Image (cartoon, rainbow, N blue to C red; front, side, top):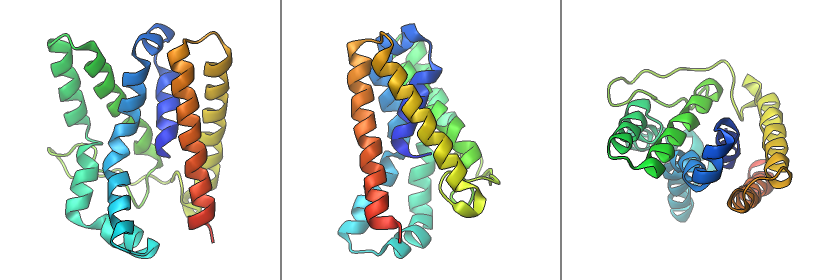
Length: 190
């Protein structure tokens, strides 16, 4: 899934009371797993790599894959959530649980770019028959479903008596989501 979509979807999953008290932790935890990928892309563009080099070669180098996969690791996220629970650090617990939930939703929509969700204990990857972006694997349909979910969820958060904090977070996430699609249209669609 596209990074900002995770924030809206994760917020929809959590109960209203949790959403209202821990919205920032949930939204941040939903976005952080893709942060290494975003930094990688900025680094690659700064080094003048082409889109083809970035996504067909460099992205698949083992050290980059390990960085991406550690942030999508169920054992890592759930261990940190358990530690936060043990230390009674609720904000961090919800942050790490939201990171794990990000991976739950990534698992069924990554084909060629599947993560190793059980690293460091296993290098196993679930190669899904569908992709969130690749039209060869129904990416256009997954993208439409994602877009509809983000728009409906955002409208719900903005209009249905949600907290001011949640409305601000929703507005920021929508701006990121729109910026992402503008970037895709301008630079990736040929």
